[in-house]
Image (cartoon, rainbow, N blue to C red; front, top):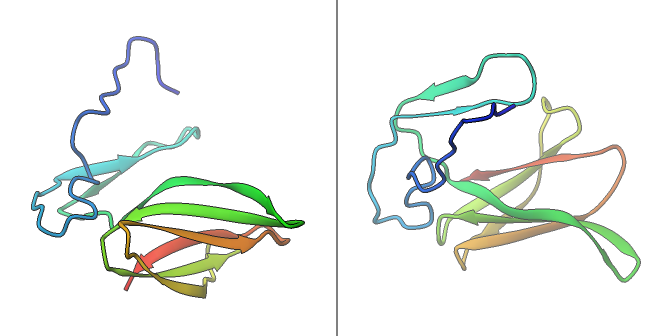
Length: 122
């Protein structure tokens, strides 16, 4: 929860600075993540840099087939391995995608049980 009076500044460069542009150099000192649980935020120290982030994702119908569609921004000309899991522990490779446009789209028919996906730069 974000309490009243808190400020979120989306104009501050952060972890995604230079994503997709290999000539941009910049050290990112720290970033963190949190959710709606009562656990404290988790801080990640060091010069780590993201290699992808989600632009959009959703479910759509294509000729009677329900598809999960994920669009991600990534590093131009990089190859990304797409993995999936049902338990966030055991991951399986689904495919590999070369990012030739600065972003890439992954789609797959929706199945049960529910699946989670990740993109790993190779």
